[in-house]
Amino acid sequence: MTQADSGLVAVYPGSFDPLTNGHLDLVQRCVPLVSKLVVAVLANDTKAPLFSLDERVQMLKEVLSVYPNVEVDSFNGLLVDYARRKGARLLLRGIRAISDYEYELQMALMNRRLAPEIETMFMMAGEAHSFISSRLVKEVIRLGGNISGLVPPSVEEMLRRRLLAPGG
Ligand code: PNS
Image (cartoon, protein in one colour):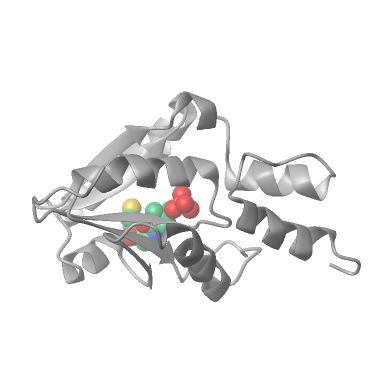
């Protein structure tokens, strides 16, 4: 499916440490609905990420380059300020289970208070992806489990090199 001609720009923010097939599923489903989707990696994260900001931006660019209306970027500071700079009227977030809801509701309401003109759109994770999280993927591969089908092959390779290489 091609992109919509609505002029609508959406920002899909996150840590993406690493990108999973759950994130990818959301991107794929959002792409036809908007004119442009900016996938934006949070730069000033308080969590210590496994992959550097550059590595995460690169992994996203590699996998998402097939979508002409997807831009990969990073941002600092308030998400709504960044969205305004990008001309975005929509923030995209995924919800997997009810446990995601509280955190997402809080963020959406805070963002609405800060920027009433920007709407948060939630998409339910696809059934096949609702159990996937970046945190669990890292834990499973670290402990020797099979993560194929949970992340794109290029990300699996990066995880193997980072977590399973001798001395890694
Ligand atoms: O993938 P994550 O870690 O759940 O993404 C969280 C993210 C990046 C969406 C959130 O931490 C964020 O928007 N940070 C930017 C700072 C900000 O705007 N905070 C106030 C909004 S509630």
